Amino acid sequence: MLDYETIPLHWVNRLGFLVRKELGQLFMQGGYDVSPEEWAVLLLLWRDTSKTPGDIAAVTFRDRTTVTRLIDGMVSKGLVFRDMDPSDRRKSVVKATDRGNDLEQELVPIARGLIARALNGIDPGDVETTVRSLRTMTRNLSSERDRHKTLQQTKEEDHVQL
Amino acid sequence: MLDYETIPLHWVNRLGFLVRKELGQLFMQGGYDVSPEEWAVLLLLWRDTSKTPGDIAAVTFRDRTTVTRLIDGMVSKGLVFRDMDPSDRRKSVVKATDRGNDLEQELVPIARGLIARALNGIDPGDVETTVRSLRTMTRNLSSERDRHKTLQQTKEEDHVQL
DNA sequence: ATATTTTATGTGTATTTTACAATAATTGTG
DNA sequence: CACAATTATTGTAAAATACACATAAAATAT
Image (cartoon, rainbow over all chains, first blue to last red; front, side, top):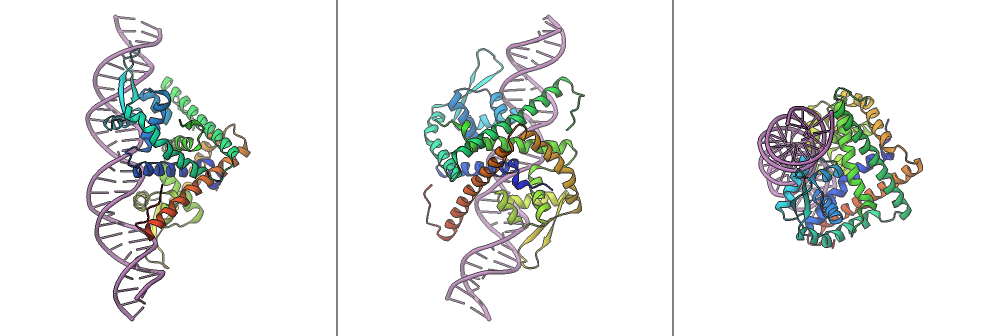
């Protein structure tokens, strides 16, 4: 038997869906046509000003083609635009438009409200511990992932025991 | 500015997607045609033997129609079946088939492997704290949700300030 | 007691999210 | 230079999601 109620990954799953849904609805109700996925991309661009589709795919764990379509949508909404990377012409760089940048002032308060509601009644120290655990879990799983990927690429026949 | 790296909801989002993806791939690689969503339903049925679609929708935060389609798929895969609730003929009750029950012995070890990989290097006390925080956050957001829902149903014109 | 409302589920239809396979262009390497 | 690896995109298709509507049964009110 698996007592899944005491397992963090189970709650990460449930809560993850709930948060994505709530955030999307809050944006919609506020009159903003921004999906949770698009919000995640904007967060990256607000901090780093430019990201390649590959970067975004790696960070969000989506397939590159998924990110391409996501960017397509954001371009047609006027949130971001594609630029060239002079140092490597294979790459395209995604940057926020003025509109995309302006949204930071409008969307962040909405997100903060959701965060505040979620964290209500939780000890700040526990929040810190939780973030640390979640980061470690993410790192654990994603590095494992990369290792597999590399192995598969170098030795195709070398099937790793799962 | 929103330092999202220090915010649990952000990591819940990322990690939630990663976990769902990994779990689905592990099941697939093991030869099991079970999606992460189906896995979540099976978890419920293994513990409680029977759940209504409404229960499942409430617990997973999905729309009722989404659950209907999910159950449809699981029925056609032979994982679950629909039964009648004698005490309330509106309800249908979802139960695992023998095959669905047998899967517990096969899928749980796979999930345990993933869990172990994720939790690697994390203090058990921190895991406990993390679970507690995640549960509280889920409860905070879902109860807020229910409150809205109820208000909307009782007083349609009473729009709550968000 | 029956009329109305609420609850529970399912259908029709459509959108959104996702990604595998294949392609094209560019860079890195032996 | 020839060949492999990287980066992004398009073609295509699937899976997941849910809104509007329909149906039936139970709960409630009059």
